[in-house]
Amino acid sequence: MADATSIRELPSLTGIRLRRNPLEENPFFHPSHGFYITPSDVILSQVVYDLSADSQPRYAYHRAGPRQEIMYEPSSVKAAIVTCGGLCPGMNTVIRELVVGLWELYGVRKICGIPAGYRGFYSMEAVELNPKLVHNWHKKGGTVLSTSRGGFDLLKIVDSIQLNGYNQVCFTLWFDLFFGNLICSLEIEFKKQILFRCVDPQMRHQVYIIGGDGTMRGAVKIFEEVSRRKLEVGITVIPKTVDNDVGIIDRSFGFQTAVEMAQEAISAAHVEAESAVNGIGLVKLMGRSTGHIALHATLSSRDVDCCLIPEMEFYLEGKGGLFEFLEQRLKDHGHAVLVVAEGAGQEMIPRSESQKQERDESGNLVFLDVGVWLKSALKEWWGRKHPGELFTVKYIDPTYMIRAVPANATDNLYCTLLAHSAIHGVMAGYTGFVSGPINGNYAYIPLEEVAQTKNEVNTSDHKWAWVRSVTNQPDFETNFKGQTP
Ligand SMILES: Nc1ncnc2c1ncn2[C@@H]1O[C@H](COP(=O)(O)OP(=O)(O)OP(=O)(O)O)[C@@H](O)[C@H]1O
Ligand SMILES: O=P(O)(O)OC[C@H]1O[C@](O)(CO)[C@@H](O)[C@@H]1O
Ligand SMILES: [Mg+2]
Image (cartoon, rainbow, N blue to C red):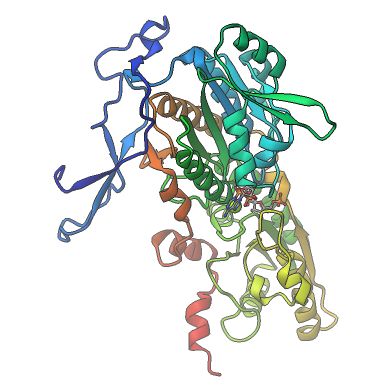
């Protein structure tokens, strides 16, 4: 098996002297045999194989964890941490653990937070971070650093990474001049002030980017530009997406917390529906292009009668459609609960020409509210079909409530492991990679590979069949094909 397995190699910094891992002297660690990860230590991309099909390609990724030799002198490291895109439970935990891990495990003392996402690299002052400051951050929802969409200006971002030291300009300048160890360029700022931008050749920069699919596409470009300029900057991305749409890794942090939070909305919808005559409880959950939150929330709740996701087309009227199903459900049980992912049915919602073009600052299509549309379609249909009969639709939209919360215990632990894996990888000299669990084991995956892969719900697999069996919902695709035109 080993011969047929190809390892996904990672870019790595060169030209920096190897040195002993400081964990060696850390009183809390007693590195013994097996503690350090070696280059031949790998994680297989798949654990399920069909042995009769022996031509299947087998891939492996380098295993995450501390290396015996590292490529950075900790006192020369200057690390930057940035959070991009939408919120996700656990972002603050990742930041906290990056800071504490860099500080405690490796003795790094220069760690800065870049505010407001990518744009913060070139338009805002970085914040100095230390363990005391971030001590309680894991208990807070959101990101203390703040985040934003858009603002990706490649050259300005890489200029800023290359030239950072900007904040402590006076101190660094005179200190370095004194020791005759400086490359500096003068710039005239808008207010005609003279600013000194310094590059200290002794400092080694590391960039920790926390973000989703869009962030990763940006990070690939940053990594390429940094490589083109031959900068010795370690770049890593910690995958963040409440939608769980990042591929290759088992799941993204914060996802389980979001699923848990969604239970409250579903339970409330169930109570409202059950307490009405012909009551429908309708819950919209996040999921721009993937329905993982809706699917998992449905499976764990058992109160849901129908789950609609972006990966599956559905239709409202006619044989085998949603309304026919709900009508039967109301007849049999008196109520029904409907969970819909925000990206489901978008192509069915009427929209104006300008709405068709509307995008957010990152270029993502702006969706119309599928819940509002469904609620009004349901009412119109019932009024037409059963005039005068009681009917209630209670629409609950917990969109931001499921992601603007602190991570639960499992996600908090997961965030810690992600952050530590990232630190060990960067300190070992790897760059352009993503840390994440594959089949339960932490691996380093080339950034470009993760940026190109999407994790969608497979509506042909067992899990989706399970959703259908739990809900009893129609198989819209098959029903649609069976309809006579
Ligand atoms: N193709 C791209 N090239 C360069 N930068 C990009 C690209 N796509 C998105 N970005 C930048 O990445 C950042 C985050 O992107 P986006 O808002 O899509 O969130 P995300 O990372 O996908 O996270 P989430 O989907 O979880 O909210 C933004 O600053 C955006 O400008
Ligand atoms: O309103 P915002 O901040 O743009 O975020 C909404 C989007 O963020 C996500 O949570 C992640 O992309 C999506 O599910 C949702 O469409
Ligand atoms: Mg995204």
